[in-house]
Image (cartoon, rainbow, N blue to C red; front, side, top):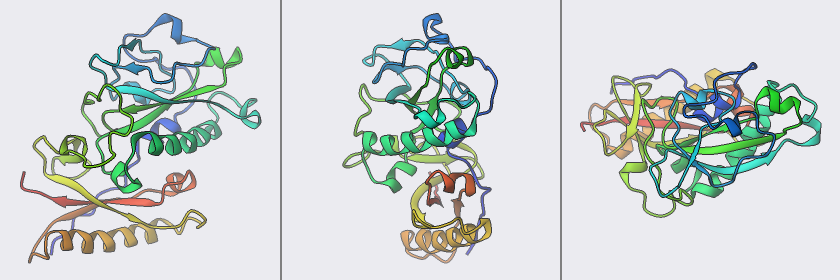
Length: 266
């Protein structure tokens, strides 16, 4: 039996949620009216975003008709509570709040259980107002579903309305695979050539549990994924598996799962 241990990885949502301070470019094809807007964004609006766009803390990319090709759709627009209203624009507490709110709304919006959501090609990113807009009183945040992750070379187009897109029988086009020597390689839909497929997840703790430490989370993940992938493949003499596990930062904002991957021949 061969084992391949992959480095830990962050969810796209976590990366965006914990973005740092300072003004950054606000995406490609920006709409000047959105750049420093104090007014909250439109719920349900669609945009064409790429991986570089979701690494920025703010975004002012022009909206497009959702009937046209698009890679992002706004599924939640919220407002920071009073206890965070006096925070600096780059305060990590804003990211922690938005992460929790977007995570909850994302699961309700997209359909499917938590395990399926983590094994899908889609993920989400959040954006806050620009520093100028924040100083002028803007306190909104925006959550967008996007057709990819931080490991994607490019994003795929979403359906006209992404609501409940993972409800029921899900096609391979929306499930995540990886093309390359490890699962840290380029993430692609499973309809494209790939070497790895995300096949299951493991729950490594309960909501009320304290973080048990990196070593224990990794060992739990490794042992479960070993058995899970072996059972899925009907216990061949030799097989490759991999796993993605997450650190304390993700635990603190609610993630309790790791992902198991199986090596494929496709």
